[in-house]
Length: 113
Image (cartoon, rainbow, N blue to C red; front, side, top):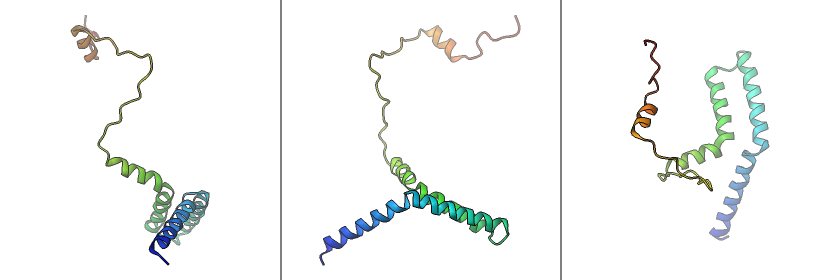
């Protein structure tokens, strides 16, 4: 057996497991686990630390793709500009007085006359 065939089959198997873990099967499994942990914690058969570990594990299993995208997004330093709107022009520049009025939210709000 060549290494290319074994590498391809390993990649296929990992993709299959990833698909199963991110599908409705994983959601159902996590729901059943959370219900079981909740009953065990309510009856006093499971301590809070172990129950919290199961709950965090379920959230990480279901949210793994979003977590990975967030971590990979932290590495990019390029700022994404907002999309340009067609037909939109830049707002008119404000004069110095208007800038001062806009900067002071309490201008003219005095109670003493």
